[in-house]
Length: 111
Image (cartoon, rainbow, N blue to C red; front, side, top):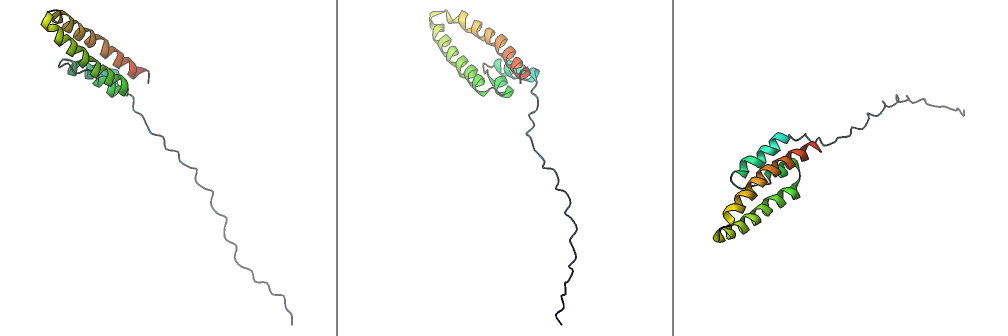
């Protein structure tokens, strides 16, 4: 009575295909050149430059402009005592008010 009994087990259905892997990329929003220029001009009225560069993502440039202008303003303050500072300080301020917003706005376009 040697009976060869084979039990048939139910075969599981095939697995569904795997879902494709989702790749998440960080979205960098575009920076506005006008906002960068305003962030240079408005605080620049109070002799604080570089914030527009920080907004544009140029941290090193923003810090160089900020601390560089303050160092230049200190030298011009010392030159006030020999009267040439009355000419050089406003010239440096006007030059920074013109050049820095242009550079900050252009750096937004290149990113």
